[in-house]
Image (tube, rainbow, N blue to C red):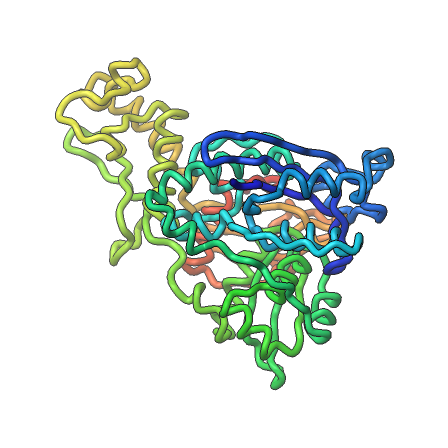
Length: 453
């Protein structure tokens, strides 16, 4: 029997947080047999960034039950079950903290769907709940609310159970989480960090940088580093002596800064990012009939690609989207192999370029739109997004297809004026990694605006 859990919390200092919402679904491996969900009055203030993320505010919880009022029900529904959660360490830790405040020792076997997915689905780009469920076609509603996230985890766990035919991986993944004592020096480092987006640096006793990372919440990420049981994290905990950070205001600047800094300093604990972060590229060609074709292939010596992808799966998903939005022929995109018309032509969703029924000119106009949107060549643009403070904006400048750099400007500053902006930006390498980061981000995320000039 499994108890699939998700909790939302106030945020704040490590082990001083409180639960604001809990959802538990008792699952027998086939169906849900019991369930419980409730808002919880944490008797402490919710951090502003958590309010923004979850939509749960202090006013909503004034009349909600306190944890001691729901504790008995939580124990009942979890009795005889294994706790299952996405990032089980966090949900288990929060329940244990709340029960310890009541003088009750909470111990239970756990399974983490992040770890299970990494073992059973090793080719996924991301194992965050939102991205993983989207990749697997699992519907998720009320994201960052306990009920919505727990229900999505039920569906994900059911899929993982089906993939682990002999249940050997799941049985090996069962663990009893021991109380992780945070050493005073690590607790001090956690308290130094803010709950903001940015890049953080960890140092050893010789003031050498040993790890560089980026996070949408630096404090939360530092806490994960210093409470993890994983071997690599425990090695880091042994030698880390200090931590510093730089605010970035938004994730795109953080990604660029992290990439540049890792290349510059090559920290010993950043092995994962020393490899190339993209594998496939989108290329264009013209067939014998004059039709523009888009094809995905592994990036090798031919570097004249339009845009790059972290995996073949991501590249194919990109082509599928444009096949639908621009009525591009799947045969011409390399998504179907056939000697006749493509399947979409029979459904009247392709205009017939695959059998020369659509004119070359009309079809090529739509393909060129895709190429122009995603290729940097000859582009002059300013990517504007959130700044480090509410009174500023960030700006990334690309001129004639070359990434010039990024900067932060006051809201009163004319970010639309290229001549002035060139003087205030910090230059960054116009290399393939920077291009991939920007192109990939713009495909998947929104920014405040993009100014063409």
